[in-house]
Image (cartoon, rainbow, N blue to C red; front, side):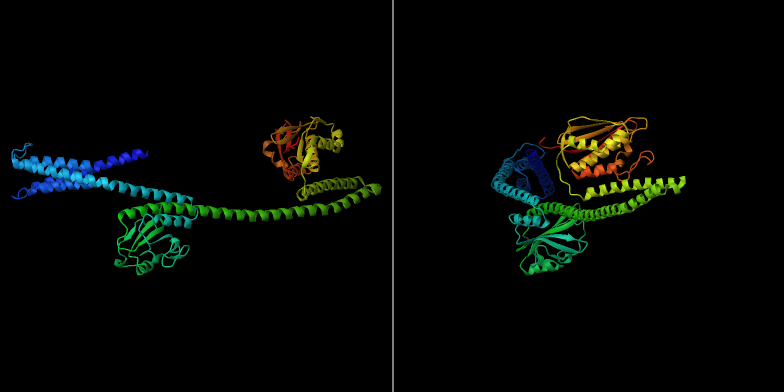
Length: 538
């Protein structure tokens, strides 16, 4: 690709040289024709000038082309016989030979000059490109805007003849300019100055033109800091804007100690450096903004997390306190109701006894609810240790706890041994699996005998315990609700319970690093599961 670009540039240079040769040859011919009316005017001087210009400002091929064109024009229009390619006189041959000889000598001298100057020019150009590449790498590796500006000034000194330089960032909202690198009139990096002290007028934000002042003393309107530079011996300056997407964000300012110190080539180099600086500074600003946003977001998240944790802690403490304190009056209520039924039954009619029995039933429900609430609250307050736990041992303990319920509902419970070992907490797992098994036995149609199957499955570094039943099933839209507190899908009269059982399962399993879930469909039973890390030694 680079070779193709160089080839295109070479071909383009040749075409420009040919255009110069043709243009000046025609111009010399036209002027000679006009001046031919003068009796003593010779066209040779004009044709020699055309060849000289073509050789100097074109190339060797352009010089030879101009030599040929001028020789033909001189021969055809000015040597006898006129309008004929032949030369009939000795004077004509001598004039034509003089023109060709002088033109060839001019071409030779021009070629020698190109040959001698070309290596030096190429060396200078290569050195400039290498310095620009080093500058670009340094800028890309820099992080802050001040570091970017400092790297630019450090390397630019080898390419431009300045004695002092600054890189400034403009803030049009406040009307100030911040010095990113360099020093001007004692104002150094990080300090700010009013914009009007640096530029003649408040330039528009879309300004993109450079300001090259060859003699500061000749300025009619000198900003304060520019005037002080003149007092310190700086005689000229070059100011190149830093522009990103037509938005002026700053300026690169160079000061020289002699008049007209910055040539067109120097100005072009400064423009290239300024373009690199503008893009790099804009990117650095965006990175800084993103970092500030990230820090601010983290701070807000931390504040809200702390507030949420405090709120949750207060709510858990309130729930625990309420559940604990309400148990005593509920027990008193149960006690007095039992005394009435046992000691005063003969004095009560059937309606009174029915009311007291309802009081007892609801008191027992309240006692169960408060017990479950205390269990749920303790899960957040307990310090839980995790160790290898045999699910076979846990299952044996659960079957003992639920023996009465299993017998009353004539449930069939199948455990596919051996169950695997997991990393967990034995107490939490007994509570969780007991709740799963109890729900599997309870939530079946009245005419169906409960059937439950329990097994474990190894899944990479995890073990999943399944509890599958032949119950009524759960709709997909409710499958996340059943693990929340007080979420009931059925009336208390149909399927009694507190609506906290599966919430206890979820909270307990999550506290020991596990997960819970369900797979179910209406009328097709459910498969609830808990998943815990496998014992690495099993």
